Length: 143
Image (cartoon, rainbow, N blue to C red; front, side, top):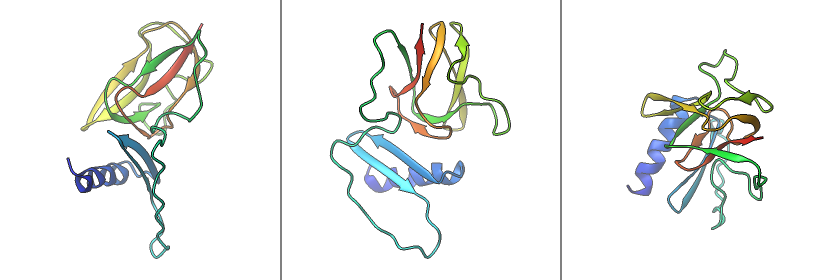
């Protein structure tokens, strides 16, 4: 897939989900798209070569006793079934193995992501509505 196709697809995701900002790493390329007001000046800054992935804060490492739930596929991360519904879990929630944690939307399909671990949700890594890539950390589950 060429860069123009990738940008077109990312822009389509932004418009479809009414996102103001989208950060994503596709292969070795890092993209950050920001919606701006019409008529606002446009500036471009080349991203650093070692830019962080979309779903991780740089320098943040999980403690040794924390288990990570990662994205099984690339999609848009949703914490709740709809914008007016309560999130499935919050930081501090106790979950059992098999508990529903979030939804990843990929190609108009809503995929329910369940916890493989019992414990307490220590951290929710991506923001609601953020595009995550396969393998990105979604949740940290502690003892």
